Length: 273
Image (cartoon, rainbow, N blue to C red):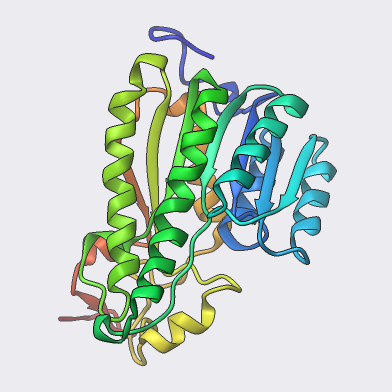
């Protein structure tokens, strides 16, 4: 990897050649797009997900890019299973260079309709999935590695009907800052990507239910929805030497929704508040 003072602007600095990347929640959406992008930029990739049907397709796409792939069907909430997968990745592919924590999930409910069991589920799906992977991944990571946590713009504003989910995404962002400080001495960079308006097969129904797509208004200031590959491109950048001086940061990949705040763009180009 490049050191401070070296040429950081060459095209090779964005490549991940022969690095080892782990991606959780990799069977669909942002996770799948990220795993394939990592491979196309030169990394060997270890992927896992709860979905046994879609994961093999991702493995095939990684291998079609000419890279090695380790995969497993497992739940990122399962501490023992995550620990075993991280060890297997190190044994089969080598020390981990990149860890992408993408696994998560939610459901729509007012807070007073969210049972203690439901709350516990949301905490485990959106926070414990990250801590499990970091806890077992960091000891097997090479110095100078990168961790990218997928949060959400919901961490930055009120989220009616998704209160606990948003709180956990905010918790991941806070944890990210602490990890960036704690592991900076090893050159391990820890950052977040916060997507929005990027529906995937797992959350398209939620977007419709939440009213995120409103009649007569563009979904974002860029006047379109995003694609998982557009989030994956930012993740690849953060994993690369091009981002060698970025740590503890969150990059919104949201078409401008955080910047716009309550402002919406009408179809005629005017603005609504």
